[in-house]
Image 1 (cartoon, rainbow, N blue to C red):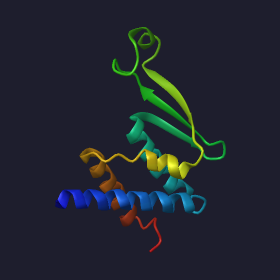
Image 2: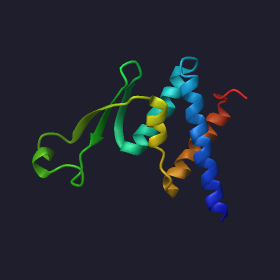
Image 3: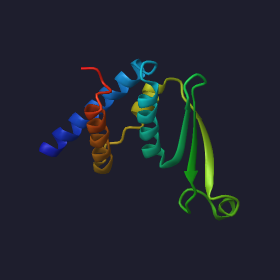
Length: 122
């Protein structure tokens, strides 16, 4: 029961951090863009993430695996570039939050980092 409660708290705090980061993006762009990139890298298993907030796009570079692409395409490149459009970065990031144990540990580390570095105003 304790694990379920802790998971719920961590997920709730991640949603709060996403809310805060989107509201204060202009004030601390570099720190919050890093947060957004980390969330998207984790979710999409991307090697590289570039967010264009003005044009509402995300460019991803992902490694090609046999599970993700067929053998013919694999011969041409070991990475694939994907461009995604989003309507609202806030909702897009929240939709990328996963509830599995490995993700929750990842989010705990993110929360600890932002708490230690006082990026979030008290």
